Image (cartoon, rainbow, N blue to C red; front, side, top):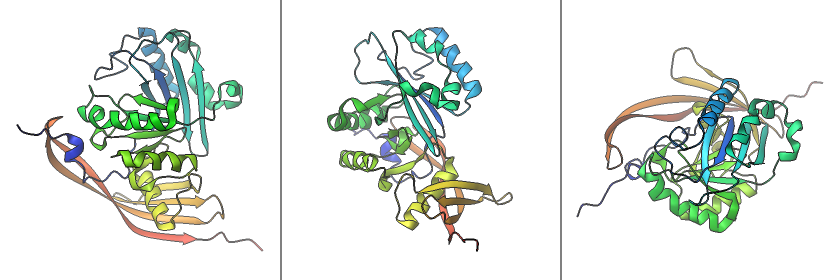
Length: 306
């Protein structure tokens, strides 16, 4: 009998750097019904919820919506979380709903813009999401469920199963909130390291895909900078600018250290590669892999004015 080959196994050698979903606002909504391929759109939630989500996207173009659950049993009063994951502003809000229609009273753009008004809903707890969305890609269930169980044993109610997080070929995928830090190809031995790193406000660089507040190039530059400086502190750097050099595939990305305010400039080259892969998840499919290469790194200390 031929052993099945999954896309997450086929793609084990592909780079995961710079592959995190780019989003700066997240709605995490508890829903224990069946997750079809399009989890939100094909759910049994009232149509008014889909209309409300569409309206929220008008004011929040980088909004990401995830269905989450901890079991498959019906819930009388669903929970939802709103994460604001913007550089320098990482906030998590918790809402207990009586019914899903309660969402219609929330203005997510207002929450993101005026956080002081919603202080009563702020929570300091961390959340760990694992993609287990098997009807979107079989790898998410096969590789994600064991990781969710491992996480749940370690952090309890802070662990949640999530609908498609992006990058199913990198399963198992874990995202830590409120910072929306993406990890891919997570194994059981990685789980405790990811949790301990996050508790210490650190990044576990070995399985780091990127931070969702950055785009792909910025995520790659963040990774190379941390590797060069041996600094995995979450708050160590802030992005100053990122620009493409003319029409080339070279990018210049500048970060500033939050401690000594030194400037760190990285030049990255992007190399797209077209590959053909085969797995029982997707059959034969062509896809583009982007490799990021660090071409130059320079450091400039803050110059004090006399």
